[in-house]
Image (cartoon, rainbow, N blue to C red; front, side):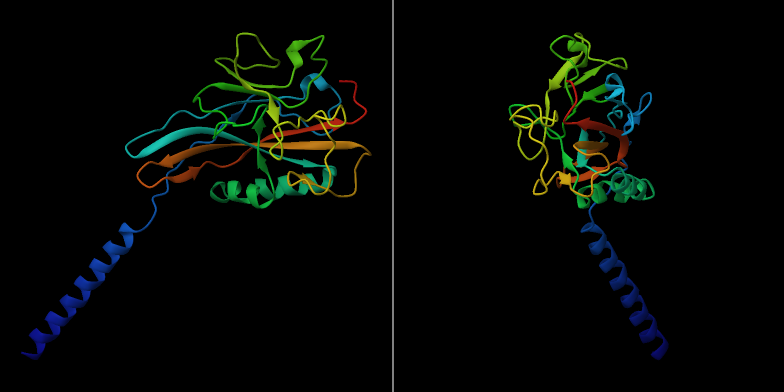
Amino acid sequence: MGAQTHQRKTFAFLFSCLCSLLLFSCGLETSYYVDSPSIVGTSPSPGSADKALHFFCFRTAEDTSSGSFSYLGTEIYYRIYNNTSVMGSRVSALESMADSSRRDSLVSYGYKTLSLAGGAAPSPLIQEDDVYAYIRLVDYNSSNSPDYKAVICTSSSAMTMYESSARVIGIPRRNINSNYGFDFGRDSSNPVPVSSDSDYYASSATVRDTYYIDVYAVTVGEDTANGTKSYSGAIHLGSVPVSTSDNF
């Protein structure tokens, strides 16, 4: 009898543990793997003086929607710096992180999502899958050469300048104010960053009156059953310099 009682107690204990494990597992959020966007061509660098090359081009991930998982699109994050060493150390730190933690670290470093002129930017900003995206934050002789105007657009082929056949998403604006552009110092709609701006990291300037915009792209998906978001690794699209003395 003693042995049978011991066996029943052991069985009851194991059964209880199994039930607890199943109940606990049911409460866990499901994490989905999300493909990252991919870089196209050469990323712009903060030391580049050729304004024609101050654009970002990448390809969005393919739609991997399945069951309760839904592909949402690609979000664009940016941060403004005035010191290339500070920016470079942040980029190096982010690049050394695992994909699963990079997007959260972007947010903790103060990177913001791009906005659009007129406000009410979609979230995520680019919702097409498997397309080429082109982003130019700063106008470059746009009055005489619309090929180099500030714009966010997509196409079925890679772009090195704006093309009239592209699908325009909108005109890029700063997250802190959808009226503010990135042509710093050009006019009242493009004020220079100040230390209180949440999208700007102020330090000792590398070059006086010059700012650097660092940009990342992240694919976003959602578990439609509970609304939980899943993110890909953040892909560094590059950095562009903007001088207040530039001849736009």
